[in-house]
Amino acid sequence: MIRPAAPHDAPFVAPLIIQAMGDLAAKFANSNNPQVILGLFIYFFQQENNQYSYQNTLVFEENDQILGSLNAYDGAKLFELRENFLNYLKENNGLNNFHPEPETQEGEFYFDTISVHPDAQGKGIGKALIIAGIDWAKALGHQKIGLIVEKENPRAKDLYEKMGFITQNSMALLGGDYFHLTYSFEVQPT
Image 1 (tube, helix red, strand yellow):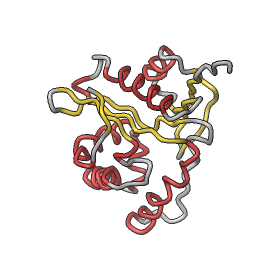
Image 2: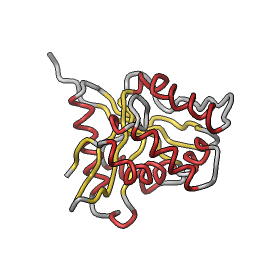
Image 3: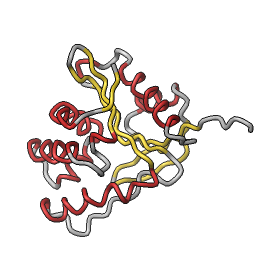
Image 4: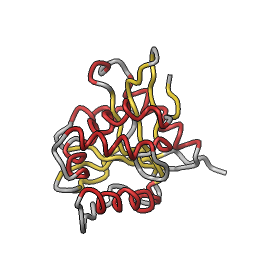
C-alpha cells in the first residue's frame, strides 16, 4: 500500500532518503558519521516546511513495514523549502556559505528521492512509487515532473526512461555529475 508519510515514519524513511542521496547526504550533514547523518534526516523528516519533510513524502508499506519512499515537491518552492534546512546546517553543522546548486526549477514537480529498502528491491516497489508520484503530480495540477539521477547509475536511468521520462541535459550538484530527466503530461485540447 502506498500512503502519505507521517512523522512517526522517520526512523524507517530517513535511511531510505540517505540511501537515495548517496554521498550528498554526508555533504549536507558535513560529517561521515552515519549516526550524525541519520539524526539530521530523521529530524528534518519530522519537521514541516522543508524538502525532506514527511509532508512531501509517500511511503510504500507492506505488512506494517516501510519498504520504499518517494520524496517530492513543487520545484518552484525549492529555495523556500531549503531555507530552514540550510539555516540549520549553518547553525548546527558548521556549513557557512553552503549554497548547493538548484536541482529543480519552477514548472516541474520534483522527485527528490526515490528509494527502496535493499531487501525489497526488484519487486516493483520503485515502479509503483513512480506511478504514485506521477498521479500525485497530476492531482496537484503539474504539467511536468523532473528528477536527477547520477550518471553512474544507469539502472535507475533505464527504469525512469521505461516509465516515460526523457533525458533533458546534464548537470552538476555538489561536485557530482547527474542527468536531468523529465516526464511531461500530455496537454488535452480545450
